[in-house]
Amino acid sequence: MKTKLVVLAFALYTTTAGFAQKLKGSDTVLPLAQKEAESYMKQNKAAKVTVTGGGSGVGLAALVDGTTDIAMSSRKIKMAEKMKLQDAGKSVKETTIAYDALAVVVNPSNKVSQLTREQLEGIFTGKIKNWKEVGGDDLQITVYSRETSSGTYEFFKEHVLNNKNYASTVLSMPATGAIIQSVSQTKGAIGYVGLAYVEKDVKAIKVSYDKGKTYIAPSMATAKDKTYPVIRPLYYYYLSTVEKAVKPFIDYVLSADGQKIVEEVGYVPLSK
Image (cartoon, rainbow, N blue to C red):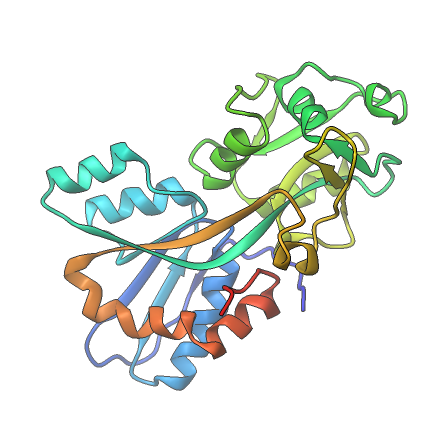
C-alpha cells in the first residue's frame, strides 16, 4: 500500500500513564514511525507517542541535547555525534528497524529510464548537465537533493557519488515530499527518495552498478532479494538510560505486527 506522503510532522496524543515518548529525525523514517506509533497506541491505550521529522542530523542532535527519546535516522550515527554523547556521559544504543531502497526519480515525461552509477555521479556532481548526454532529449538537467542535515543526503553522497561533492547548482530541498513535488513539476528534473515515497507523479529509473551490464528497478521485490544496489538500513537511536521506557515500543516495531506495517507503508521488513 502506497499513499501520497505530504505530511512532514505528526503528533499523536492520548492519556498517558508513565513515559511519554518523543521520536524525532529522519524524514525517510517519518511515515513509518507515524504508522507504527498510531498502531501501537491503539493497542496500548495509556501510551503517548509524538513523532516529528526534520532530518537524521536534527534527530541525533535532539538526542544529544535531551529533547527526544528516540532519534530516527537513515544513516549511521557519526563519530562526532557519538563523542558529544560520550562527553555528556551518555551511552547510545542502536536498533535497525527496517530497510529502504533509495530510488532515483525523474519527471514522467523523461524518456530516460535507466542510468549507471557513474552517470548518476556525473549528474549530481555537475559533470553531466544535459539529458542528451545520457540518451535523453536536448534538455538541461535540474538536480534536486535533500539538505545536508538529511541522512539520505549523506547516504547518497557516500554510496552513489563515491564521496564526491554535490555540484553547487544542485537545489536542496527541506524534505522528501518537496523533492517529489519539484520533480513532478519540472520536465528536466532528477532527485532521489525512499521507496515508500515513489508515486505516479514521478518515474523511478533502473540503476546499474556494473557499468551498464544489468539495470535493476527499485521495488519491494528487488529490495527484498537485494538485487537492487541502493539499499540501506533505517535506525532508531536512544540512550541506555531510557531503554526500559522505550523498549516496549521498539519491541512492537520489531514484532511480526510491526514488520507487517513496515511492508504496508512501502519499506523493506527485516528478514526473520
